[in-house]
Length: 190
Ligand code: G4P
Ligand code: NA
Ligand code: NA
Image (tube, rainbow, N blue to C red; front, side, top):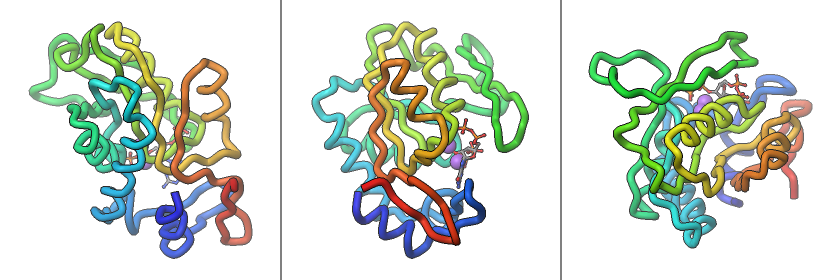
């Protein structure tokens, strides 16, 4: 997606050969117009996939997921990472290991919002090692729902996430595919 790649080139900051900072439009400040275009593009790619629900994970997946949900006309569920006063019964959970933080955490979705009749599109801001995505898949499968695929805003193709998801048979649609981060520059695939 060209507008997204331009935004990454102009406002992204290469923190290291592994980490791209995009706090200017995705992870802290949000660019609503770009997010709307992102939602439109996800909807275009998954329009005929029979989606009934979008599932993402708080916090940064929510903005692109909501825009896609608006375009597709379906509800958006975000998995919670923290315990909540009101979210307490009938939880579907998965354990997710973060390579960056080197901690294991639990993510949860209430059974209330997901059923075996659902066909789910998973959306997230980043795909790196894919552990968050795999946790979401585990929860969705526990609900008995089917998975149409994953929509990713920025994929770091040099990490294992995409390959593992594709090997498991999932469709992965990434709007920007980063081949490498080198000398302060972002190199994209195609
Ligand atoms: P993963 O590769 O298995 O998905 O997990 P990892 O532990 O690497 O990622 C943990 C967090 O860091 C996730 O956000 C993920 O989106 C984010 N992340 C991974 N690589 C990058 C990167 O190069 N740049 C940026 N900006 N983020 C990256 P999170 O902690 O869940 O935070 P949030 O959703 O609340 O923003
Ligand atoms: Na993130
Ligand atoms: Na995320």
